[in-house]
Length: 294
Length: 260
Image (cartoon, rainbow over all chains, first blue to last red; front, top):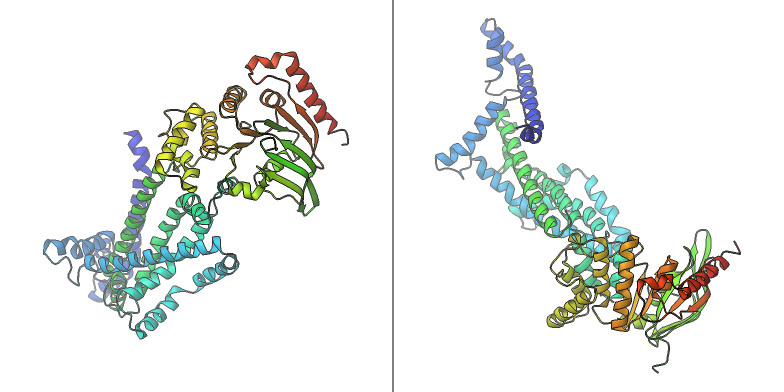
């Protein structure tokens, strides 16, 4: 019992603390509207009536956890139960839209990141020149550049999934470049000298030493890249006119003041990111253990 | 031709340019190493013993003088894979098994699978690690890892074995044991061995030729041809000859320090 509590105790404590704060915040923020309604109706609110009202408004400033939970269930499990899992009102449908461009952008960003890292490690000119541009690229607010990427790609006839994936790529290649440059340079002087005593070619040195040595760095970068890629996909959905995806749900929710819808999309996005990052962590553990590096 | 030295250095100098001015790592080094010699390089830190070994291996380039290995330049010899090099740390790849680590240079050299298998079996037997082919490095002790790294250096049948303080990180007992095994291995393979060490007993016990070096500038102060027989049980270290050679090495090391 105590060993189990040692493991899950801290997690449960934090979760409880979050719920307590969340409910307290909901009561505090939504009470103004509750008082307002009561005043217009000419009634006095008891404390329990006040709390009941703040936790059940249609468009609360801060929806209570159970309201968000009910909305998420209604738009996922409920949809599945009624056989409309992929209808336009289903969060599963919108999550899938966002997930597909997240994953495509993540793959593209990882490939670009590894490619640039290899260039930086093996080419002196790139070593001296590329990194400042890579860093500069990340100082531009993504919200500013996302619409332009959509517009420019649309102008040359590319629309749909790819422009959003490009925005994901733009965010996700960065941690991969930084991590992989460090990873590919992680073999020590001795290991490189050793390769030289065997008269190994550059390609052999890369495949047999540098690439395997970089794996711990790669996986750490991939976790950051995956989260960034999801943010990119959501941001990419905003300027496309809120057609589909979790970003579109956020935007539509804010047009109509549907705070419960916004929060349910936010929570879904967070859960999606957590499971994707968790999945990479799982693969990381398995691979590094297999490689004797964990 | 067979009498020609395997390794020959003529007036070899190597100067590193540093921010504090030039450092003379090696100055006018002349040395001949013959086939089948076991040569130890001994001296205090900074005497250039490791640098000299690295020059032979073409890992450093002399600024003056000449070095030939098997009658070729050091670079040609490295490209011809003339030597196996054992570093102070075993440097085994954790993601490869012991067998996989020994295979690594063979894969790089394009040796076919059947010959790889044969070579792995042969060298694991030489370093007494039979049965460890499928184990991972972390499953082995430090001494066993270093033996695996020696096996890896032997795997491609180079005639020359260069060893840079290979047992420096190991404790005395393991070290004695490995010294014995190394002599046995040397007798069985008839390799030419260049061995860098800090330890006087180790140098005297192992070598047919002891090169005593001293620092600032790195140079050779004495070359001792050992009169000890090729067969050397561990207790030879209590014999009169052994103690005399050790004494001469110590004198050589002290002489190198007189100008401090």
